[in-house]
Image 1 (cartoon, helix red, strand yellow):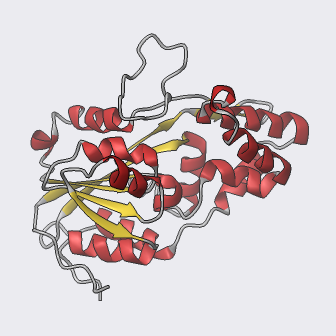
Image 2 (cartoon, rainbow, N blue to C red; image 1 turned 90 degrees about the horizontal axis):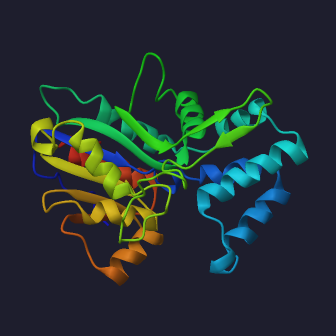
Image 3 (tube, rainbow, N blue to C red; image 1 turned 30 degrees about the vertical axis):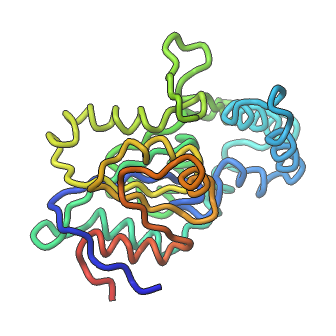
Length: 271
């Protein structure tokens, strides 16, 4: 497959990125247990595939197993953060995101980056800081929307849904988003906080994703927008079985291909 041709030039664009298996080459929720407790990783998989009527909501399942990790195995903040710092991020993905964020105003398309993830605040904060992407002196993402989490004094990582099960106002997504968050609603809310995409000057939206829960925001994008879809995952399956979005779809398998696509979206040669 040849290198991607440059996209139509725009002055400003918004890059919305999923994290697990998209920006990162692993799933941060499962990763904690893969590093710290193979026993609980097995439980994670078994409970994830329980009969539908018995299956826990995904964020609730993660929270349940984090409690077991702390109570039954004595793992605390230092253990969890150390595990997340080991999560792999491909150098090409890191380079690509940095290049998008650091584009030169006079020669390249300016890109605002927005992270939209079903992970949680602690995992994302730990990983991004470790890779120098979200620190006190460098901010890759203008905003991060994810599930809230914090460490209690005991060392337990307390995780909750972005939209609590007890909240009066639940999202009414009909596309199939998880109960904790509708990514389509979150994208529209991000744009609304900036007065809408036209007021913000976003001539193009780019969505980097892989999972079935990325289908909803991708379906809300327009013809001039671009979805960068990882092959062989839930998002590709939903596009092919439930219908294609209005926006362009570009496929990728590996991080080096995303770096090439990012260069084309900045209208800059990579090599």
